[in-house]
Image (cartoon, rainbow, N blue to C red; front, side, top):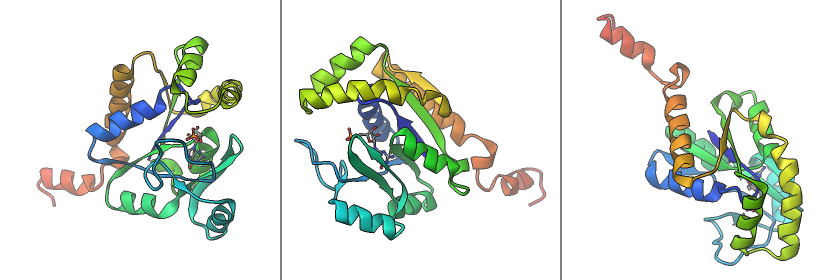
Length: 203
Ligand code: 5GP
């Protein structure tokens, strides 16, 4: 389970897309949210767009691995698709905030499978520029997000890895390196003891 968090505009979406494109063993967890759909977004691809009542029912039904209130809207990670992907041996990428990351990290079962990466923008000026360029949100929302960014970035120390996104290609290569190293960890290599026993002529 690979979590990528960052303040809006730090380049997280671009990095996630590139990772998913080049790594067939990585799938994206699609969150449910009560926030309105933005132009260009597709229901079931970017998010599952649900109303408050449905979201509440999903909480009560135990359907979320984690959920949080972010920028005035609810967001949550549906449990089923993640569990199915993990059971099939596929790694899962999560684009969630620090609150969700904490919930996953605190989970007895899931915590040890979690690798968390926080992406920082190279500067405040660059962050502001990216938020304006995106221009999908109103000026008011951009201002709110700039204010929230400082708050979100205060949680960087809760993450395993930090990437300063100066260059997208380099950042993608950095996440690739993290993924590779984490996949090579002994405890993540299933069937290793049998394999080594075979190598030693002692199956
Ligand atoms: P946006 O509305 O810009 O798509 O996302 C706003 C914030 O909500 C981002 O920081 C994103 O990482 C976070 N987010 C998206 N989905 C989830 C989720 O399922 N759980 C949590 N905790 N945060 C989420």
